[in-house]
Image 1 (tube, rainbow, N blue to C red):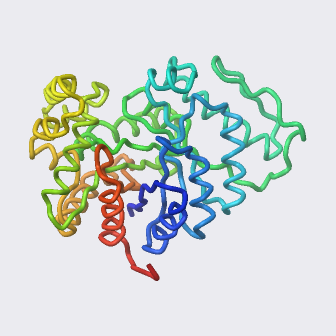
Image 2 (image 1 turned 45 degrees about the vertical axis):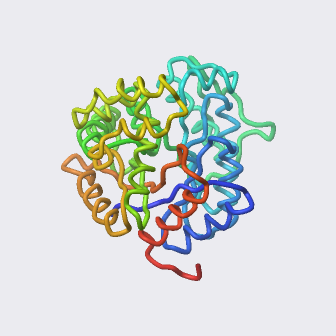
Image 3 (image 1 turned 90 degrees about the vertical axis):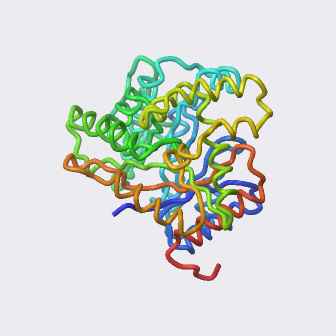
Length: 352
């Protein structure tokens, strides 16, 4: 069975209620991002406002943080929430990590693999185990001031890694508990590229696919007027499509030339959103997003799920993260789209 979560965000005055609505509408998880707001604080608010659902970061930036600090935060949130927190880590890109966060960005896949192992070492120390981690990039050689912990009955918190390319995918499948797939994707890219990579890496690491979860985001735009939803999807596709790292997604449908075409339009005038939208063909929305009326998106989502389910390898998408477009989309439309997601894919309206 594929479970479903919802990406949430926005002012803190409303964030707790948004998380509660995700729970009320029968979803399995709420996920918070780290763009304009810090992810751990958001997750804390969402956990406090809910009782049942998982809350995760999608993503928390790894490299600007000490892995020990991140591990401590995850350990504490898991305890406070009754084992409902998942820490999802992302690498971001070199320019952002260095120029905004003043942190080092080198060997990102290797760095992420060591980061996860360092966190797991901290957690095992908290359980009283006599362990250390001495990697090339990160080290955890001693426990906290109180010595090794005594929480021997505590399960290790869950850590997921956001991955697009093959090296980061291998790092996630080798060391983490799950993978967070980027929302700019296609059914073919997930089925033909991501899942086989995960299966190969799990096999190489001697891991059981049942112990690893693939979470996949989607660009999901819903409106009673399908043209509104389609335009918003095109805006988001155009934003991601200008980044060469995402060209393999376009390649999954032989649309690789769109990367260069969108980059030309963006460099000509980054503020000309109409030109960017015009550069995204209608068929691209069908391939790289799910957009339309509530009934339209229900059918499309069912098709997407059927394509990315587990095959003979036992590896498939186990969790979908539903989230809308945000690039140059008005806040009121983002709120309307979130409500439409809850109403369209929720199992109950509850006391909403």
